[in-house]
Length: 109
Length: 113
Image (cartoon, rainbow over all chains, first blue to last red; front, side, top):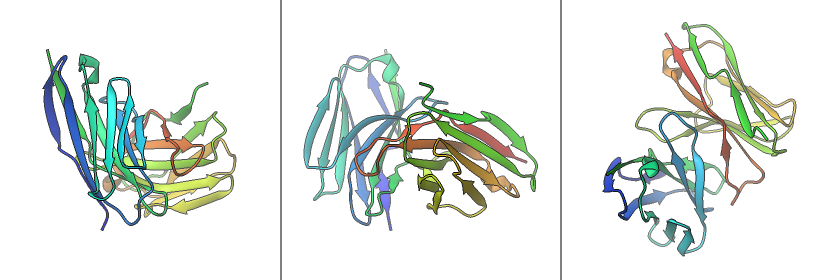
């Protein structure tokens, strides 16, 4: 079956760095997406990886290892506004997104 | 640009009632999607469309129907609502399939009593 695993909740301190891990199993693979979702709002796109390696975009970076079925989202210089859920989604061979349940990130002052 | 809009934002139905959720996008996107989001679960694809006049089933299509008569609109219908359909419904659109990000509407919170 198809499955995405990510931690349910994480806590970090303002100004620190946090890494959110995601493992996936899909029928075929056409890329890995990360989205941010604030409580009561819509998901918004953060990053896309299809090749192995690290993609950096400002304070956010995303890493992919296709051989391990593994990705992580790295958030640096954490700000209070980064408190949100982070959704990992893998695209299968039918170009459909398989979504994880999300990681709720709590930032403490 | 309004992006992706959804109406209504909230709705309460009684079991057996019907309703239609409307999604509209002004980005000229070919692809549109309907998801539901339940606590502790990932977004699940209900139906999607790859262009005007076409629709296809996603992971959880039972109990729902869709229509895409105009490129900018994607309608989701519930013919006979059930309590199991209590959820938050998100519409999304994208310009392509593979690497293209999906843009989401603000969501509709539906409660079926």
